[in-house]
Length: 384
Image (cartoon, rainbow, N blue to C red):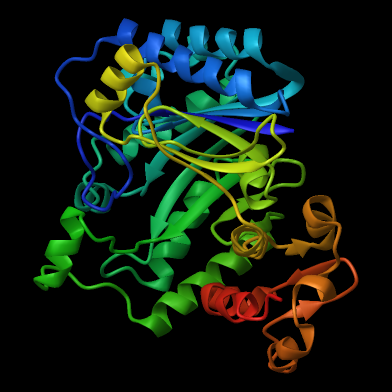
């Protein structure tokens, strides 16, 4: 099974916290972009082993700015070259502005069955700080509209913001839960190099909650979500039963995924039976010109080595609530945990209650998941 990602690299403005491949443009040649996307779809169709598509995800950037016809044409092209499963999850990321919300019914008609809304905050002061174009009123009105159109929708919130207290975050999260979403993505604000926030934070223009408060906010978030019947299935993602993002699970369970569009990445098995890491040019104009004039905008393609693949499987799998499944190692290497990892060297993590290992899974307990990155490093150091 394969996940399919389409990257739309444009936004109306660049948010100060965002380090994604997003750009602001006055005009876009959508017909040319469609042809470039088509070339990449055909490339992967000609080379991929597994043509069964279980999820399609339009990400960005702000893909809700795309013309509906372009979205429809891309879905149709994928269906011509691949086999889209009957229950395929087709997600589009959207901003909650009134102009974009007018498209939601049309998007549903052409096959989008899941919306992911970039809400980020539910109060106007923090929305302004985060550089968002919408107001809290617009956000809540858009959520109400989406409730009536889609059985499956999600929205993002950013917390651990400057001056945020446990009480103010609890009130905001309770407000979000009052809209009865099936899925929420809740991210702590991080400062990424190259962003506007990076220079502002460096120059002491604002401060973030200290480590103790950030940890308290994280633990409180987990408790509130659990009390509302959400499964904490990945570090920043929460879902009601059967509503976890199928597309994201494909990444974390190390399934094949195809990415097209400027800056997209792929991990995909080709007809030569090797698995490849593919990176596409990130600058949109270069991506467009290379595709249209040379037939490809691939910047880098490399065969994934055994050790690289094991490290990726560990890094992705341990983000999940259920952890890393031994079945994935058996699938790719026909080997069990103890044939790939020196488990004796992990006993100290088990003794400190930072890791749980049984016959089927290696996982990080809920109370230790805030330490996931350092635990992953220690596990990767034990690979044979």
